[in-house]
Amino acid sequence: MGRFFVSMSGVKKSIGVLLANMMYHVLRHVSCGAFCHLLAVFIFICASVTAQAQSAIVGQAFYEDPTNQLDFAAVRERTYTPYQGILNKGYSSSTFWIRLDLDPARDTGTMAGFQQDLFVLRISPSFLDEIELYDPQGPQNKRRITGARYSGADDEYKSPNFNFVFKQLDQPRSIWLRLKSNSSNIILFELMKIPALTRADHAQNLLYGAYFGIILLTLLLSLLIMRVRFD
Image (tube, rainbow, N blue to C red; front, side):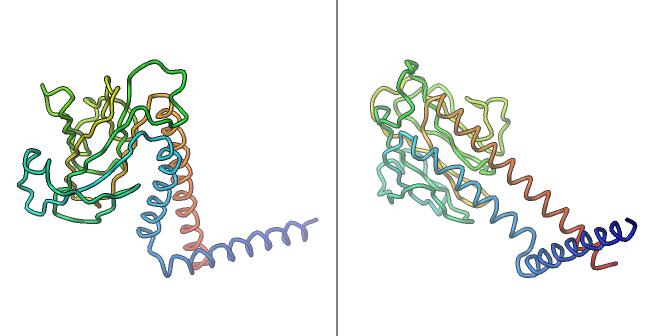
């Protein structure tokens, strides 16, 4: 029996060495920071796939202002470049203006049975510094601005993302947003009603839970590598 336990201990150690060597060879070619960043981007894209199918945004276009001097009146009638899905402009010192065409009548498969005229524009990821909404048909009594630089206490809708609420959206219309960020300029917009938004946030939370689980596993395997290599 003693030999059996010794043998099992040897097997466990051999498996540990094998896993450690596999992880070591992976991390030799990809730094931990790069690995975590790529993993986060992958999960962000996965989380957006379902929500994009539900979104009532029918058109997206952007305009880049490298001078950072133009205001809404100056950029409203400029020529915008259409795009689909996620806008990814990388690291840039420019200000980006985004025009979104909204159609609340679009059949997303999630609005039936809900009588409220409450839509939420969900903006992700949550590391963007500053996003300001310009809605010519909306309230004009105060600035509508959000981002990592601002307190979440004033958010129009509480969630892990940035959000703007539209209480009366019964006709198609266009809105504009100004994006200024020192981080990577990657941004996704989704327009949904509350039930669909709640489901999308839940799916996103599950994916981010998986992300942190993988990060924890990576750290544990890194410790295993250190222990095996120093034994």
